[in-house]
Image 1 (spheres, helix red, strand yellow):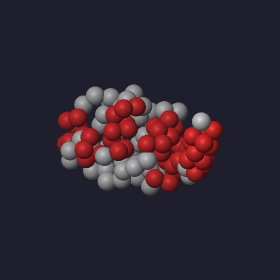
Image 2 (cartoon, one colour):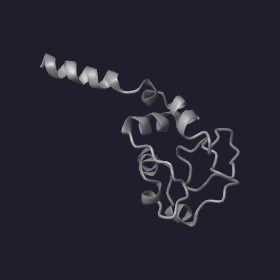
Image 3 (cartoon, helix red, strand yellow):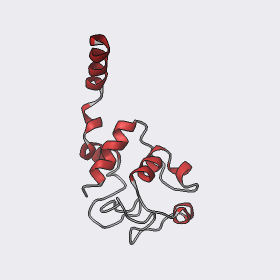
Image 4 (cartoon, rainbow, N blue to C red):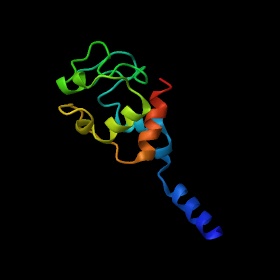
Length: 115
């Protein structure tokens, strides 16, 4: 039992510190295309207030047909699925970046929920 606990602690502490910091991850992986100001850019919609917002619902952004057709709202599960595989979530989505690590996705989503 002690061995299992020691291994679990070692694995947890081996995660990059940034993987637990949603703001740092957002700045490193998302900020080049997305803002948190409420103003969309040509590269990506503003993510201010994205949690609970209608999918493809940020004003002032020209969404892909695939994302507009998706419908629904940005729940934790939908955000996670989109960050995992944007074109799998909404075929035709123009976002190319993926967030492979579940811990990183959870941290980014948690951060976005505060914005």
